[in-house]
Length: 296
Image (cartoon, rainbow, N blue to C red; front, side):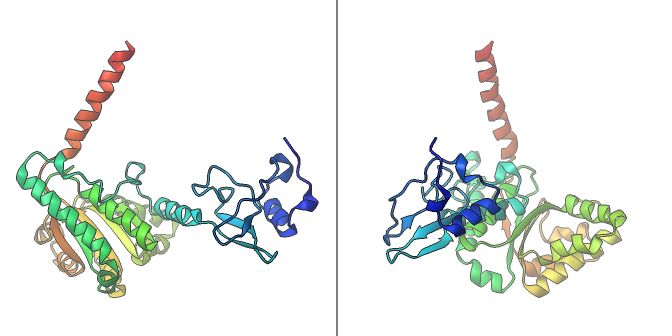
């Protein structure tokens, strides 16, 4: 491995590497001569961690321009890094971090009626993303509902969130209704209830999963009403999944305040009534069993 003469590197680059705790003597000699389309020469090390083969994986470039000046700028892969950070901070479950609306397969449903419902929901989700700017100005979200567990509601809701993050770089957050109230209850002892509550009040896009399965109390209704009120007034987008229709929310939140706000804030979209999660789990187990039997 060749060592690099520090005198051959731009002082600012050496400082940047040092601040990141990188010992330049551990690198092979930095390749010279790779040019961008504008003729700028790449001075930094190029890593296979960069899909564009331009930077060292940090998302930053150090360039020598055609006039001899040296500048730093973001690499094209920095956008990908930002998207990854947004998805991670949104607490999207690992299994759903790469799901897309396009890959939402309507053919996993067996009944034609359910396939049609899935097709409508998929098309509506895609149109929602494409028209997000105008819908966002109205604070309009989506309400995906089906009485059947495992019908694809969560999967499609997160597909929408992933698409919004990738296309608009929005900040989002995913949480189940049970976990939302559990986090708030846990904050009582710590004394940071307002901080936890503010997270749900101020996030631009909130995915609230499985609304209606949480245990009802006057506190849950008043708290949820507070969250919805704040988000509605600020025109923040809320995407909700539930086993209940919007009208049936009154059977859980008997005060009627939750259902009326949900109707104002979201467009209802019916999902299929088939439990595809069970079907997919069965297929996965069958594949796994075949592999296990091969090993015997």
